[in-house]
Length: 454
Image (tube, rainbow, N blue to C red):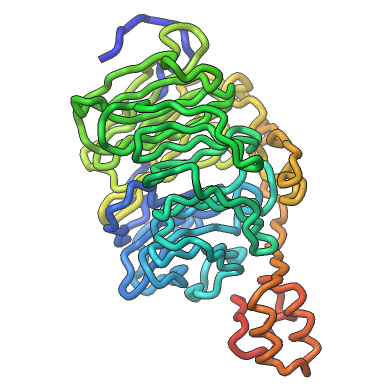
């Protein structure tokens, strides 16, 4: 499959290991929706999994420590009226998660400090604009409250979650279904893959197409495209003979790929997960029972096959832990949360090292939870690189701020109608609708407006 040249790499001996059974999350009815998203999202506090739900869409949010059998009555996040297709944790607040659904809505949720005690059906904000189901949601990497959504209406919205308004609407760039959208490292550009077999590089604020490549992969099955930290684009797709391929592109010159590799003839879509700190890409095929990983360097052949981690069971989806959620004392460089039909199984990727000291070559400073910009700054044209933190003493989570939403839309009218403008508590609520987890707010008697989760 690949030319085996023995080259020096500290990741050559990375090995994967599934955790013991009692550390898995068991008895979960993973969603059966036919959609090529990961169905799972993780951060240093929670694992979220899209599950089967009767009469709507739901996902589980479990504290990482809640391993074992999950009771059927365990509370879910269940405000959507159609199946949930994609979920994404906010990189700047470990309690905020966004979801996109077949009901055409994007919802943003705030999870209580210690996880759910009762089911959560009231989102902090509902973002409405798509006319067909929403299959992709992804947060801006460095700017607070900026969320991108892409729907089967071939439209991309970029929202300011803090006001509930769309900052950018990209309507004319994609004539067909959008397969994937990825921000670059500082969130100034996006790259998309589309059913018309084109990869596009777009400046979303100028609504301008900077580069595109027709037939990046010749095959008809879905492609994926992600930005790497050096600005190049990594794609996965299929050849005309239905072989799975991966390719590397320079957006400055999309005429020819930097490199293309044929992999195998399986038909599962390859989901790429990328670690910008180590330049390792992990490929998890839907329905595969393996994770392949590659190191990307600036010398030929550019994409170097490292190894494959194989299990017996096929994967229904996959969650990928951000770097700050890993155990640096065990030289863990990646952790996946693999979805089976009825369970979620963590898989730990480790670099074997004899020393107990902190391995600073494995853990360069990584993106922390602080954002570099506010949504307004980003929209006005500013860019900010990720604010980096050291993992030398492990990651210590800070205090998460509640997500505040200042609404300028129908919710105001709803609130004032309900309260008939008499209750001063309701007036202040209508000015700043925020999901507050403090006990003081929970005593507002404001019918139908919103409920707080204690």
